[in-house]
Image (cartoon, rainbow, N blue to C red; front, top):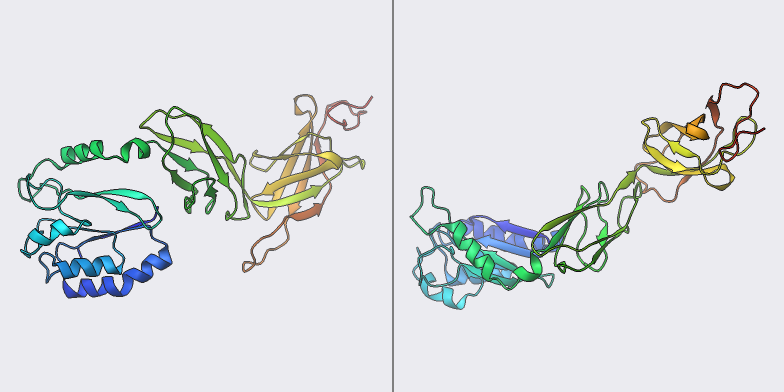
Length: 332
């Protein structure tokens, strides 16, 4: 959910900024919930019913107040017919209005908006934290909303979450999935559509059966780099052994040799040296020098690069008369 909170709109200048810029911001940023603090919108002190209506018409979903809530006396009356005008929750009992409201967001979800005022250098009000705890405990959304998952898929920006429309991973690859069912298996599957083409998810689906209340972290490993299909042979012309492990210059596993000595890997830099190891205790090894073709910055990468390069032997058993093994078995 994309939430915008606009703090302390002051006087005519602030109101003009809201009317001129908020509708466009909602459209361009695809905002789901907009909250505006309007306690100083009427000449710097308080709010009027007309100003409240203007904020709502501009796209605000809720308008909050503060210690200047009643500077415009009409607010004591019209707040009762303004369901999205929210004064501080910890005002004295029997104060007109409400300190919290269930709001229908633009994406169809429901959100609880609570307004509480601190007590440092302010009037001696009730404890805001206790008031918030009471409001949360009484909220009908709590049972459904308090079990959530944080998805972590490094660099997988733009990936979606299947069955949760509107949930997208942010620029770092993090996202929040709400409304899990406690004590039952919930499947959280990622949709790679929309991800950068140089990022690959190593797993796309996980299941979790959470208790009620916790925040669960699910990590989805990713591999970042340009995809490349390498066809390589040993110095004697034989294909690389099927199943041999392939690592980059940092020792990270990037792939496995498949049929015909082909390797599908993701390479993190334009020039890289890959190491292929096989045999008992990785006794055999060869090295592949990879140099990727230059890629234009203004073109989105599609597909993968194809290379045909040899694998130079770098390690073999000490017995000089033995050939490189096929499928990990020394030739007799």
